[in-house]
Length: 108
Length: 116
Image (cartoon, rainbow over all chains, first blue to last red; front, top):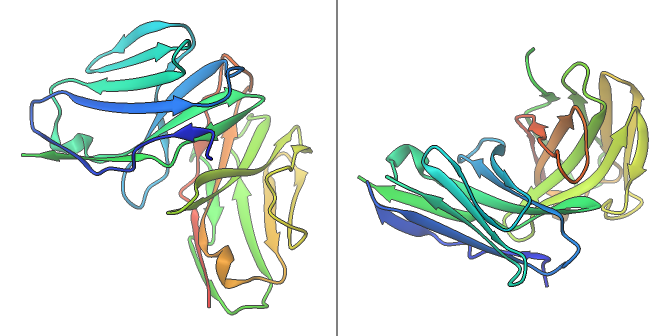
């Protein structure tokens, strides 16, 4: 079983809607969590990091962390076609472990 | 800065051949990481270096894989002999610092390896 679990998707949302991406992790020692965006054929880029329980907002992006439930999520408000990409969840405990990624499709 | 540079961008080789992938990290970054990405297994850390010293190579799949960092501006990942199951995209990444509260890695464009 992979240590960081994500639904591979695709997740399809209409333009302007909220996209909700979810991730669970198995290692309770994980200390920090990250969301990377990867466009098709490109390399991953960091978009959000979160270290404590609760919400963290950055523009249209909100990361949510619940350590008791071992759950991390990423909300994208007012989704745009340019948000169409694969979103990788990652957890850090001694090293960074990535999930398989969720493919998001924003339909115009 | 030009970012992390990797070469070649694409490599097609035959089973049994030696493959060498190259990486130049961002100047001043003390940490260098090699990852492999496949559809089935996602992005996996193979090895990482700190100040040119290998710190964790537990992700290296087997002895056919080796990595070196002879200086702060250059690293290689070698596969000898290569096998079809090694086909993947190999990413190099670098980071200025590394730890639980700061983990921004900058990824290179990747090398798409196909082993026939």
